Image (spheres, rainbow, N blue to C red):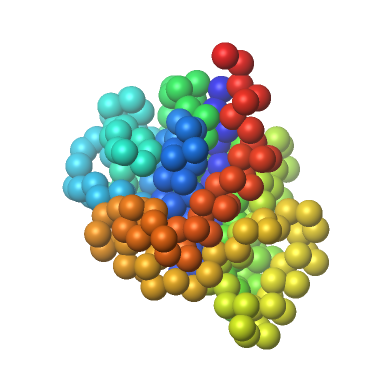
Length: 257
């Protein structure tokens, strides 16, 4: 059965969706069977794979029960994708009246989980019901942290929400790891933030760091991962290294054949 990983950070602009798209693509290139569930109403992961955000059914119809998960999955060269669009922003209100509202995504992923090695959930950049659904659906959390001063301020809020979810809704939830993004080794600030994050999360910070790289910013506008847009860029090399490190912790060979 596949492993569900929620990619979360309530602060926007930290490389959350960039990490979701490019790590998924890098793992697929390594032979993994990967599903990306776009759970952000902005639909950036959807467009990052070159898909039409207006396509239906999307994850919105799935969690409201009007379509099965299998009907929403779109195969691509780099991962299978369940798209999202702005309709998802209204789901928070609609979910309130539904049974098992915190587990709608978990139930949906359960329909297809055995078909994948890894299922990445790209959560919205906020701490609300959709994010809570993502936390309940996940086995582990992957937290991208931008190497800037303000990035550290919101971590305590995120960790508080995670603790509540673990205590009340998903007791098996664990931290997969922390990924340092937008790293610039030439600046003292990046080095200081990296050291502070390692102090807060001992043994959980990936050695592979994601640098500031213009190719990472340009690739989404072309609807492809950076490994396709510029495979020799520092960004592509960083995500390939991150995928290899991820697989050392989660080896594909561990699966029964």
